[in-house]
Figure (spheres, protein in one colour):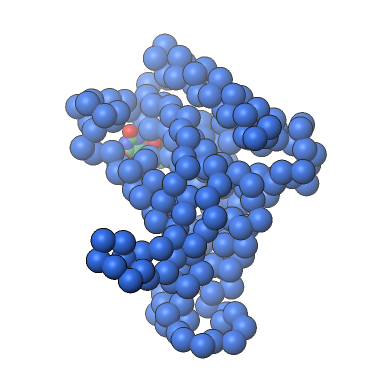
Length: 210
Ligand SMILES: Cc1cc2nc3c(=O)[nH]c(=O)nc-3n(C[C@H](O)[C@H](O)[C@H](O)COP(=O)(O)O)c2cc1C
């Protein structure tokens, strides 16, 4: 059995484009490996705590025995990532970047000595500690033209930010299924949804077989 970790960050429980596509991926996975093959982390319904003074003190403390309470949520999230073979992330664009719940999640999982370490050289000052595994980022935006070369490219802080942080801890193997123009629901949006569904189906089949 291969384990899939599905991370949703849309604040919408219904009518969500990213949730429709992450569910589609999860359903394909379950039909191949069974119900227990999918871990669902719903950040939209249960946003992680923002890191605070106690979290930072615990994360950078030396020679600590056991897991300090402040890092309990972080440990759960990191263990889920480590136990997964494949990770799917639903990430809507909120105000040109990712939802606050997904940013809080990333803040919880980037931890010195646990998911990254300091290297020796100026050229390579950080070392990722998570073994590489495939990540599928499913994104949705209200308007369009954020793609490279498009008039809104410089305003897109969603995929670049997500990819930078994931790559920093070792999760640099990222495939995308992207939808835009969700607020218009026009023919172009319908075409992008249909294309994203095909991409999801193809990736689910490929990553289940690899
Ligand atoms: C709080 C909020 C902020 C948003 N900001 C942007 C934005 O900056 N640019 C954009 O193109 N769409 C924006 N949108 C539209 C969403 O990206 C779009 O509706 C997307 O489909 C949401 O994902 P979901 O369908 O999975 O909920 C925003 C939506 C919300 C709710």
